[in-house]
Amino acid sequence: MFRIRTYNKIAPAGLAVLKEAGFHVSADEANPDGILVRSADLNEMEISPSLKAIARAGAGYNNIPVDRSSERGIVVFNTPGANANSVKELVIAGLLLSARQIVQGITWTRTLQGSGDEVESLVEKGKGAFAGPEISGKTLGVVGLGAIGVMVCNAAEALGMRVIGYDPYLSVESAWGLSRSVQRASNLDQLFSQSDYITLHVPLNNGTRNMVNPESIGRMKKGVRLLNFARGGLVDDPALLSALDSGAVGSYVTDFPTEELLANERVLPVPHLGASTPEAEENCAIMAARQLRDYLVTGNIKNSVNFPDCEMAPSENGRLIVANRNIPNMVGQITAILAQEEQNILDLLNRHKGEMAYNIIDIAGNLSPEAVARMRAIDGVIMVREIKPHGTE
Image (tube, rainbow, N blue to C red; front, top):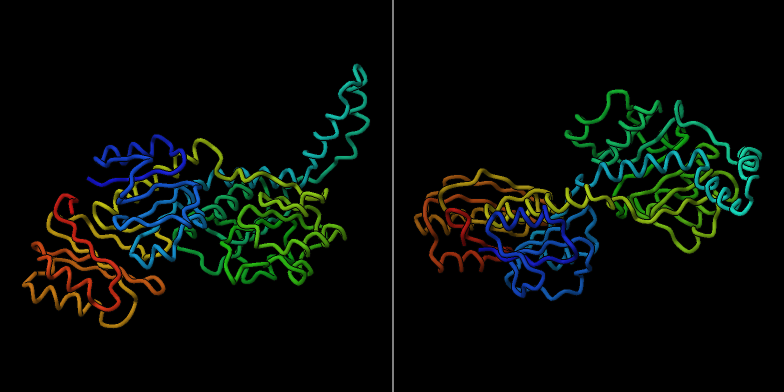
């Protein structure tokens, strides 16, 4: 029986996935095989020798010690797309709020409290100060066409917007889901120069950090409205504040507010509400739990942030799982030990991701403890697991 430790309050539907599989689930488990977590910071956590996998019920994983986990052969999962609809709805709301001065109008209307019978006439008299354009017919630029970006594109197109998308790494799955009316930009400059509204949906890395900067703002339409519900570091805040003051950028909607951003009236600071719906929390918990269950029982990996996707149909025979550094002759050394053990390889799948490689090997019988020890001793091997029939170890 696998033991799972939970952090934070996990949606009951996610816990049910693990309990129905016969797993022991507890917030107090000292020696877990797996961890299921939402937002708790595990970076300073002492890693138990028993730990095999960590599943994050959400897309971000800054709260997980990924590098330390990789060194131990611990697979880290996230749940991309599970909260995509929730984030999409928040982005569409932000799009409308950026255009119509709705928040400013509500704030002003509340100041009329105490005006008695004059409220209606004061509202009519003052409403002109909060006029704003319709989004229909305007151009939306979507940077990043993953699960959320595709949904935003399709929703905006359905609202009558012209939509331009940019993603040099567009997946086949995303391409299939994208409306045929969405135009593909060949580069960011093309998207920036044509868009009335721009929304960011890319990860934060060395290539995307401060992608909105003085130079890129200079290539945008004057008065462009910018939305960032992805990562705060995508935008150079000092450059943005300067552009807001000059009118180069009309408004900025983000759920990554800072002290400096809060002081600017053209910034609409939203709490980090992208996944704060009961539907998103349940979807993330179920997806994370299923990935954790499938990995522990079958060795299959899907949506790992540190190891490659690697899936092979469950086997009634023995299964060997090996994680290793992506260097030459690893598979040869592993299969040589199997040959010495006179083990027949029924099926083998090898995948790699960056510096990490992962192998699923179905064999006819069980390995001796000595053979497993020899595999673990191979220079470059990080982890060896032997999964016996019916998902036992």
